[in-house]
Structure formats: C-alpha cells, structure tokens
Image (cartoon, rainbow, N blue to C red; front, side, top):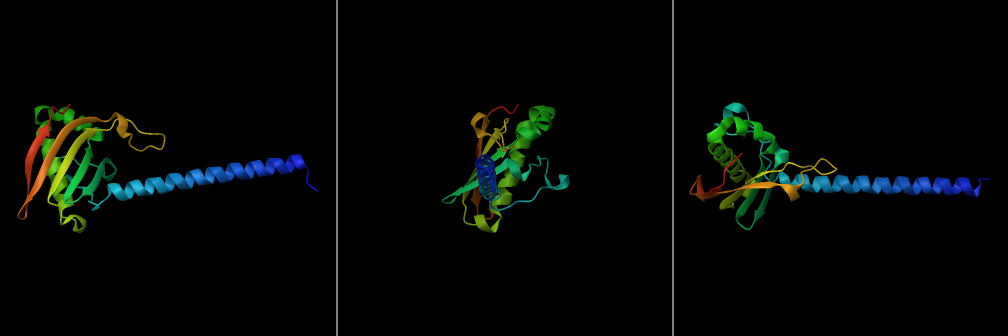
Length: 165
C-alpha cells in the first residue's frame, strides 16, 4: 500500500499540474480573443511597392473595432520608430499616408462595407506585458486622423496629429 505522505505528494502534484493547465488554457483563450478583435477584416501585409510611401505595420500592431457605423483603429507605430526618425520633417506625411492606406483597406473588407467613417489613433506602445502582448497603459498618443466615405472614395476629413517623434 501507499504511504499517506506519498499519496499527499501525488495529490499536491496533481493539483499543481491542474492549476498550471487551467492558467495555460486561460492565456490561450484570452490571446485568441485578442486576435479576433485585432484582425477584424484581416488585411494582409503590404509589399514595399504597394505602400505608396507609407509604413508596413504588422497585423499584431493594429487594433480595430467597429462601433455603429464607425471604425475605430489603433496603429502602433513603435516598431517603425526608426523609419520615422530617419524621415524627419516628412514623418507626419508618412503617417497620414500609412493611416489612409489601412483605413481604405479596412473599409474595403466585406465586414466593414456599412462603415461610414474611421477614426485612426496613432500611438507608440513601448511596453509589453508578461505574455509579450502590448501593454496599452503606458502608450504615447500622437493624435487622430478621421477618414470618411464620400461616394466610393475614402477621404481624410480631420487631421489632429501632433508632432511625430
């Protein structure tokens, strides 16, 4: 027969393993939910020739949500900061071009056909959490760009950008 001490150790190990498994499942489900939100419309990565002078932003640095007939986008440009620093005075124009491209791309997706406008928040998310996901609590905001649908065109209707570093 087993000793009670050995049985107690086995139960403790079993409970610890079960707790770790639950934590791993929770993290997986949470990260899956984040992916669904951030890939609304699922744009693809752009090739240099398709950008028209804008930046290529990885899908994980774009967050999009829909509220009524408006798209709300958050573009994290922190991974592209070196390109913006090199651009100097033209950085603001590059950001507008980039935001315009992604807004048009999201507008053209079937899920967003009924959207009438998009507010694009330009931010730097410098910190990551313990699961290597963006930590939005310390992000730096540089303003918003608002795009509207006018017929079949997407036009910049409001530019509230501050200086881009």
